[in-house]
Each structure stands twice: as C-alpha cells, then as structure tokens.
Image (cartoon, rainbow, N blue to C red; front, side, top):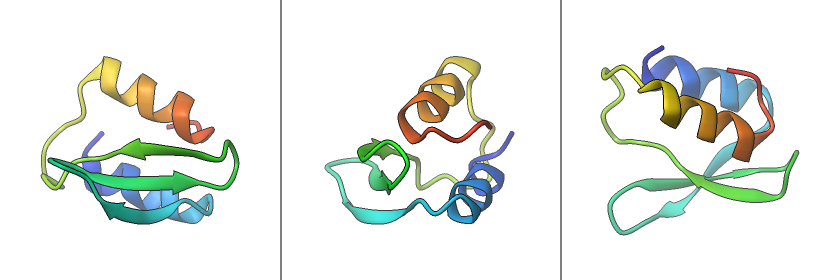
Length: 62
C-alpha cells in the first residue's frame, strides 16, 4: 500500500493532518485520540511494520 492510499483511507475514517513534526507530518485520530506520523513521500510503499503501527495508532484497518 502506498502512503497516498493510506492517507485516503485515514481521511475517510475521520483522521486528519494535525501539525508538521520534525521530519514527518503528524496526524490525529478521533477514534483513538492519538497523534501518529505519516510520510511526505506519498508515492512510496509503506513497509509492513510501519503499516501495522499506523493502523494500531489510528484505529483504522489498513
């Protein structure tokens, strides 16, 4: 899955961009009330461990 596809799914679930972090944009999930980082590299594939971490922090099945 690419970051752009994950971003679309997260937006559909109600997650949104929160602020610019030091090296990654931070997103907020209203489901889990957590902030989590994504990447600016929208065309890159997400590594499996990173995808699992984003899914856990956001509460959205990716």
